[in-house]
Amino acid sequence: MRSAITYLLLLLFLAACEPKPKACLDWSDTIEAGTTLDLASCSEDYDFLTWEFSDDRGYVSDVVARIFEKEENMFVKLTAYSDGAYRSDEVILPFKTSFRYVDRMEVIGESNYSALELRMAGGIFLGGDAKGIFTESAPYIVYVWPETKVVVESKRSELAVFGYKNGSEVSLGSKPYNFETYKENPMVMETTDGLLVNVYWTYRD
Amino acid sequence: MLLLCLLTTLLFSAAGLAQDSTKVRFYVKGSSDFWIKLDGELLPLSNIQMISRGTHDIEIWSPMHLKYIGEITVLAADSMSFYQELKKDQEYIAYLFEMDKYKRKVFLGRTAPLFAAFAGAVAAPIFFFARKNWHEKTVIEDFKFEYFSSNASGADNIRARYQTTNALFFTSLGMVAGGLTSYALLQRWVKNLKKPVYRQLNPFTVETFEIGFHPVTGTPQVGLTLNF
Image (cartoon, rainbow over all chains, first blue to last red; front, side, top):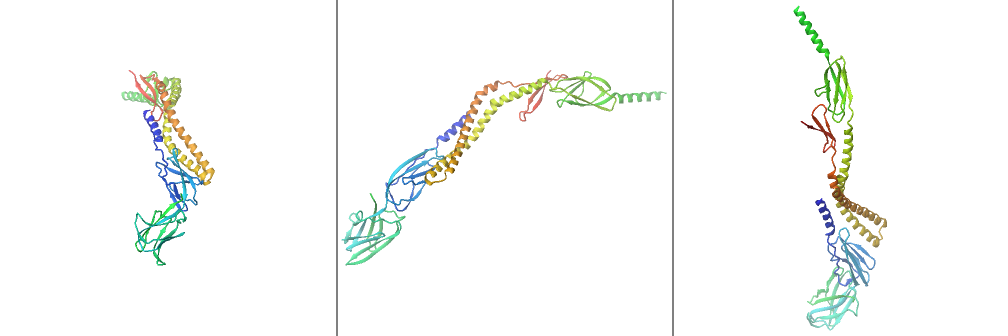
């Protein structure tokens, strides 16, 4: 009799002691549009996750691979379910989608060029008065955003830098990038004559 | 002359010995054992007896049967058969009914509740995990139905399975709880039940027979008690 009651209590305990799942999203408030993203969560103690986006798309998986085609304000409801789905926890996260835009180019080092030019898929950015010694604290800067809106396209491309001296154009080197996977900010390259070029990108506010 | 007398005496006595007794085979319909009393004397335990010719008083008794009192006429033959069906003791029949009633009460008060509790205890964990599994599938199918335009009948089918498993799980729990509660409540009543006893005195000896039931096979068996 006593062992039977113990058995029943054990069964109830088994049902009750299962940890409550915790739904968690630690994304930044802006997510890149125009490229395939693997969206993951920081949820814990769950058996499976459901994702409901404000554009009426739903997913049942740990990681969601999807593209946001346009820039907009959205939200996602993430629900984490326990084994058996008797317990759940949900979190709603508003976010906006934005393409990556070229923000500015910063150059560090000694430049003998009257102008420096950055070329990449989607735009050419030229800055004059580039002669001088530029340091990390006082770099040579060519501003792009917000006057010019150039999207860092999600494809294989390259950054190329040119210098202008005495009216002639000199190639200072190029570096290939796969912008679909390369998400570092800034994008860094070194020219043939030792200039360090940092290209920053930004999301739309 | 003397030799003639001796021969005559031997012949007569041999003829007399040979013709006075007849081998009688007893076929008694009763229990496997039976006792025979012939003219007030208990015969050895055997169904073949040498009995002298003529008419004798006979008594036959077998456990769980009434004693037969009658006569046997032993004919002049090498052998003969005697068939007798004994009547069942009415007390034994009543005992069988009582025993049946007793066993039914013990089954209802002890065996059935414990069996129900045991069956529920075995089934509950099985349905517990099955229920979890089907509930998870139900939630996922509902979600898919909402977002993926999946088949509604598939979701309904899974929900029906979940509901069935859920019902079976709670039935199992009910069986455990109900069985144990019934067992606890009926325990005293079962303990107070008196097991019927059938005792019969062998009218020819000082032995008392008691009927019991084999603990494993459940078949009636005869126990022997000697009273002095």
